[in-house]
Length: 225
Image (cartoon, rainbow, N blue to C red; front, side, top):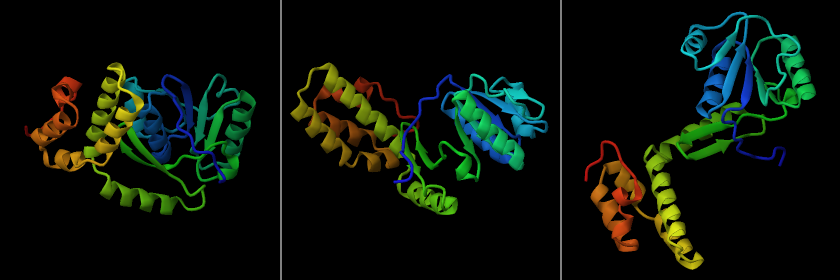
């Protein structure tokens, strides 16, 4: 295994993106979605980057990258077309102790960014260790067809049941049995068709009246039931 897979908590962490094009924008949006504090450094920012800066979603520094720009950064991404700039970002990140990714150059990376299937709390990361981003993308698209948006709610339901079982002092054997029944249940199918009543009936039968969706604090928008 070439890389050690890990999910980073970057909420409120200072992260720097060097570059202002479409790739830099995508990287910045990914960081923002994870709660990072993002700064983009570029002399030429696209309209979407400027719009994000204008509404305060990120900080935009409109100039070329300079040595020292990564001071205090937790993570840096270089998405420029300049080999010189990319090498400078990699070198400076190493000195600053920051994690660094140079787009399309695995040799100038301390981490690589996988292809992601995002279903809220359910995140599936796919990587070919930098050998074929296109294959990773194809696999992501295949998985997206099998793991629909209903899995966002499914994970929340499982999490809510687990929290309540722990709060109520359920023993390990009972908790593991319930979790297994939930994971292999038809709940995703019912979520997909909006059959809230079926979900509540299943939860009540598996546990008791205290485990219906309303009692668990789960609200499903636009569902029947």
